[in-house]
Image (cartoon, rainbow, N blue to C red; front, side, top):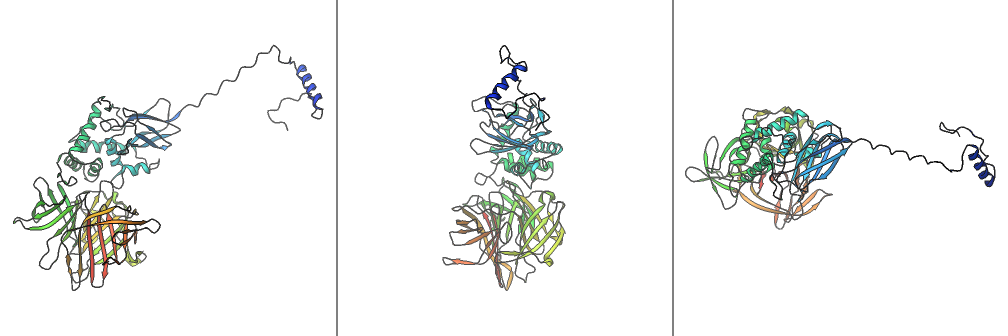
Length: 575
């Protein structure tokens, strides 16, 4: 059938002719049309190849360094449109072209030995033609900028993992983060005139080539981290949890200049929040230069024990009043000496931080040691809590049976408002006070005490827990005690003790894991972020049903006990 591109009709042979006649007719046709069989003709020139399409995308370049160039590191870029990867050269420089991609981009760099991961951003919008290169360095300074952008509810790693066009930081947010980092570092590092992301610089190399003045700023920062025996993640946490710019600068300076204890490097002088089992909430000042701990009522002399990060607190007459032990995140557990009734006070300590209410928004799991009155046994409280960015909350109380939560009772649902008072404390309805805490890896915890001896409440993010690795262990200090009728306001407990548990089994399908003592536990029951322990016995030992909340090595174990007794274990993983 003719097409729009068919040639004009010619008197060509009919397809019905024999093959020989057809070939002869074809030859005659060529002659009739002026053909000479090809003799004397010059072949037509081959058509010129079509030009390659012009590049339009993202071209990145910069330097990856920690003072010394990060050579052979894998650099990955995740852009608002497109992605790519490359490897850094021996001087830490890199070049990455991504056709069809569009700015902005989030960057992740993994060192060649796998020991270091840093993040950065490539600023700008849209795509560009060939030859237009966006500078995007990667260094400890850009990691701090990304930490500030991620906020206290997230981390640079999480920002990169979830990066897309919809949630990329704005130019104003990036500029604000750079300014905040520069201001916080000002007492120890002057960054005037230096943009951590876009200022080109030359890094020192392993071959001995010296770095330029900007690279030497990185040397200064890394040396300060080494002197302070702290980490970049811990420094970022200090920056994020200090409230005002002035407080951040003071806290960062202290972290980089105040010498830590030789055998307990995570512990620092400063203000610590305290929440006790009885519901007391106050601040403790820790002065490691003088080895003193003080609150509004008294000052105790801290005396190191045979174990690192464990101290006895002595009064002015040299009498021991309390023992305090600190874990890897500088979270502390304190147990007082027993009084005449055998009661021991127990409390948690952690560095005082100021976190914005907006950074606490989201879903939380609550565990509560609730003591309604001095004549009633404490009881286990469970709730699923949702916090809004303005501090509004909805708490749905739950019951649990055999590790299964029931959060359906509308009578146990309540709403309210959390605010921050002038001391930076969380203020809740009914007079409860508390604190928010963020560890250096971004894990958050809330703790508050109820007035009039009403008890202690802890909350962790409602995120699923991973099962522990088989063969791993948990070495901890603990306060193990109970309240019982007829004197439920007396907490009968041991002095600060210690234990070690080794995990022997893990069943991902069942969500369970076991210990060498024969204890079987279930992760994320009765609520996400909790661990359920059925009652049981093994090897001559027995234990009651319990619910465990674990936040970065802090273990909060609520035992349901029976009608006449309630148990509580506070444990803290050793550093």
